[in-house]
Length: 470
Image (cartoon, rainbow, N blue to C red; front, side, top):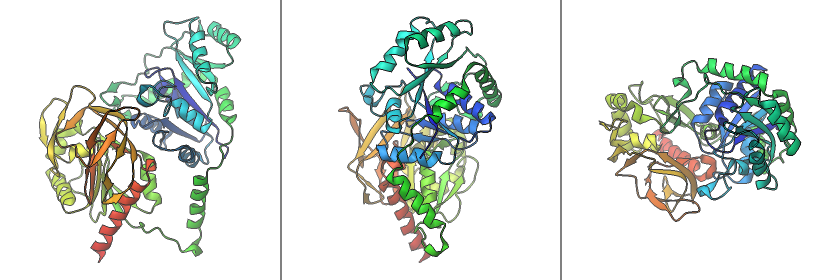
C-alpha cells in the first residue's frame, strides 16, 4: 500500500515536536488535504492536540506494544484513503527501552515502517555546532532514516547561512526553520501537556503557527518527501482486515459478530479522557455499541449495560465534583459489586477506591468498589513500560501483556493478581485486581498488545448478556 508519510522527530523532549507537528497539520489542513496523524509511543495528550488540529482522531504507533506486522497494519489501516500521514516522534530520536536501548524508540518505528524522518533541531545557543550535532544523528545508525532537517529557534538572518553550511557538509536537506514564537506555547502539568480545551485561543495560536510555517518551511518539499516513502508491503493482517470488511458488505454472507448488540459504557469527560482510539475502534469493529457517559455531569449510569470501561485522565483535578455526584458513585459501586463486567485503569482505578486525594492532598469519598485509599505522591511513582505476567483477565489465561504506567498517585490496594516487570531491568512489582468480572489497576493496556485481553472482556460481557436475556 502506498502511504505518503513522514516523521517529525528531535534530539530530546522539549524540542518543540508537538508544536511543529501541530503547525504542519494545520498547514496541511488549510490546503484541504486529508491528513492522518500518529504519535509514536504511549502518550495520550499529544494525539488530543493532533485531533484538535485535523478534526479527526489521531492514533498511536508503539513498537513495544505491537510486533512489526501489527505496527505496519495499524499504520495501513488508519492511513487508508488519506493524502498524507504525519507521525510525531517520542523523546529523543534514538531513546528507547530503559534508557539504554533503541527498541521502542522513534527510530525503531521509522525503521519498522520505513518512514522518512525530519529532525527538528533546537538551535538556541548554537551556530556552527549545529553541523556536527546533526552529523551525529545521521551516522549513529547506518540507516538513520533521517532525510531532512527543520531548524527551530533560529533567526531568519542566521538561517540561510546555517542551511548552506549543513547542506554543503552533510547528506541531508534543510526544509526550513521556525523562529522563536512567544505567542505559541503549550503549557505542561504533572502528566504532560495541559489539554487542548484548556488553552485559551488555541486555534488562533495554531493558525499563527501554520501561517508562519507556510513562510519559513518548505511544506511542498515535505509533501514530496512524504510521497517518496516506499510502499508498505501489504501485511497479512491488513489482508485479513480487508477480507472481513468485504464479507460484512455482502448481504448473502449471513455473518454476524457474536458481540453485536453488546452495550458497553465508556466514562468520558474532563476527568476521564485518556483513550487509545484503536481500543475503541477494536470494540466497535467487533460489533459492540459504546455508550459514553460522564461521571461528572450525569447522575446515573446508562441503562442495560453489559460492560463498563473506566479509563485514565485527571480525576484528581475533579475530585470534589466526582465525590459529590452521589447517585453516580452509588450506581457504579452497585454495578461493579453485582458483576457488571468492568475494566478500570489508572484514573478509573483511582476512582473505584473508597477515597482519593486531590492535588491539594484533601481526601474525598469515591466509589468504594476497591477497598483502599489513593493519595498524592511528590513524584512519579511507577512509570514507563512494563510487561504484565502471571495473571488472568476475566477468568481467562491470556499470556503476558505489554503495558504502560505513568502516575503521581499511589494506592494501598494496588492489587496482587499480576506481576509488572520492567523491560531490561530487574525491577518489578505486583499489581491489578483481576476477578471474574473486574480488571482494575494502574497499568494502561493497548488492546493490540495482546488481543486476548479485549476478547476475554467481550466474552465475559456476552456471557453476562446471555444470562440476563435468559
